Structures are given as C-alpha cells and as structure tokens.
Length: 242
Image (cartoon, rainbow, N blue to C red; front, side, top):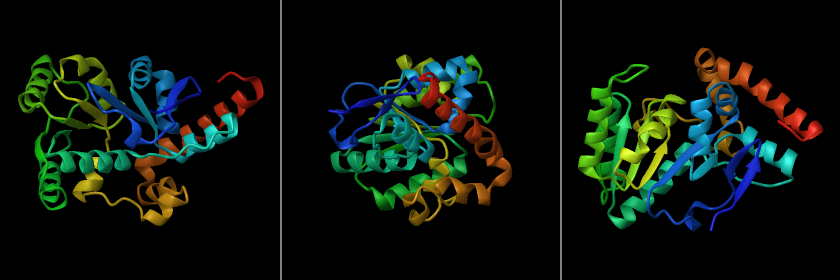
C-alpha cells in the first residue's frame, strides 16, 4: 500500500505507484511549489488538490521541502512519469484511455504516437473550446464524450488550476476509473513541446531548463511562486506552522 506524508497541509504521496491498487474511481493530481502558492489564494483549487486520492510530488521543491521539514526522502513523480506508468499498465492489460483537452492537432499527434508505442490499448479524445469558463452545454458535451467511451484512464490537459477544478466539479459525473490532470504532458508526448533531457530531470533542474526556454510564460512560477514557497518552508521550520 501507499503512504501519505503530511506536508504543509497536504497529504503528499510517498510510495510506489506499482503498489497502489488502482481500483474503483481514483483521482490523481500533482503538486509543486507554484500550485501550492496558487492554491493558497484559490479555495476551490485548494479543495481540488486536497480531494485527491493520490497527490504526487511533481517538483523538486516539494521533494526538498519534505527532506527539510520532515527528514523524509520522497521521490519526485512528474505528470509525465504518471502518464507513462498509466500507458504501460493500459497497454499490458488492453485498457482504454481518453484524452480531454488541448488542440485537435495535439490530440492527433498523441493518437498517432500511441499506435506505435502502445498498440494494445484503445484511445479516444476530445478537444474542448479554448476558454476560461465552459458553458453548461459545453460541460455536458465533454462529460458525454468521456462517458460514451468509459475509459479506464482519463487524462485531463487544460492547464492548472483549470483542469483540477474542472475535475473536482464534475468527477462524480465522469464514468472513468483513473482520472488524472497532467497539463503540459499532452504537449510533451505529442512532441509539440520538448521536455528537457533526462540528465536535467535526474539532477532536479528540469524547472531551470524549461524556464530558460520559456522565460515569459514561466516567470510567475519561478520568480514569484518559488521565493514565496521557500519563505513558507522556512517559516514552517521555525514556527511549526505554514
């Protein structure tokens, strides 16, 4: 079975995915320093993260915070790692996967790659409108598309916190077993955005390479959220309260 580490008010996954029984409906989300800071100001997002059955430590900052505050060694498990794990399981067992989010071009590229990488799984997808808030009819259509396929694995890629909040609101209506919000992984797997080399991932500097490549888009994450997160960790160490 898995273990959960109480870290800064969140139950962060501290275990091995292979040992977790993915039966029934399982909601998987990720947390990193930026999403932690966003959730501090967004009650719905905070509730969405806390409702996770598995909340993965997707960020070297979370891993280091666990070591600094709890003297606990946990492994970073990124959305891309979760995605690969689920695909391998789905392929081995002949399961069904569904991708909800991103552009049709990205979804087409994902489908083509899946045919080569994981030929034993079944896949469908749907590209919703690109907008901040969906109408009731749009939400209904998205849910119907998913439920008509009844996927074993449902991947949501609408960027955080929109994707987590959408799942939090509609999860009870979704006829899917494992539901995970993995955002940028759609683009990584489609090849429309290149993930940093495994060397940088292994030494914990994936965030830096991504920031160098996309400084404008990731400025808030790295120049605002990261210092705030470090301050929260230091304050927690001193006072015992985040």
